[in-house]
Image (cartoon, rainbow, N blue to C red; front, side, top):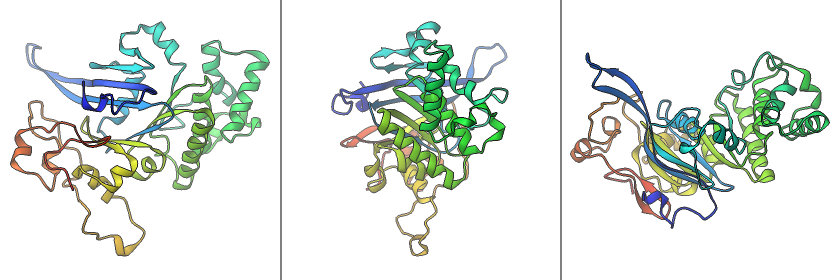
Length: 336
């Protein structure tokens, strides 16, 4: 078993467990259609999420974090790997069986406008999952809906309005209310604040924290912004080109950062104090974008951008290994 999923790491209250998850997209084949090239959006990752905690997944755009979220829900089918939710293996379920599980796993999307049907009123948007799963109807449905709206900070008079009549923050509150409608156990938040103003981001993050405490929710919180992930998460997984390169408790990740890529992400966060902007412990990542994936590459995927690279990094891919209790890193020369 992967060391991340060993008994000393996985709590008995484990809600979600991912083993060897892969999601590849075919890009080309040869003249005879025999050799295929792939983009490895998610490349053999293993993770777990315990009940009541928030696992943050962070990385640059294109690292595979959002694909991981949609694959957990089987909005996209995984290429390989297993996904367990409360001990049930999701990848083996048929459509009807998976539909029942989706009552307990909901998603909050990045764009609060495109994720809402512009032709539906707020009442019908939030009520849709309740009607689909035939959970409530009539006066009961109406009471549940108005309670949800008040819970997320929306006046019940808004129920007759359309999405275009709201601000971005209000639309995201509508999306959160819809996700809460079926009383889920796990909510996957796919960059839920990245499209919002900074002040509104703080409001939505605080709302998510309050809802977690009130309803004992479990979150997988996906973002490319370090501050948001740091604020809301209990543990953080850092992804790079489809792989988890570092995984640790929040305090350990920031106080004892071990992967150069993680250090680079943290160093890129603006610091308001000018005396701290040129700290010697900062790490600057080479290059502006993720490099193109090479199908037969054997070395570290971060090699071309790493300021500490050595020859072994070019020829041997590091494995994710445990270096401290609940702290895992994929690097030949972890930072000390």
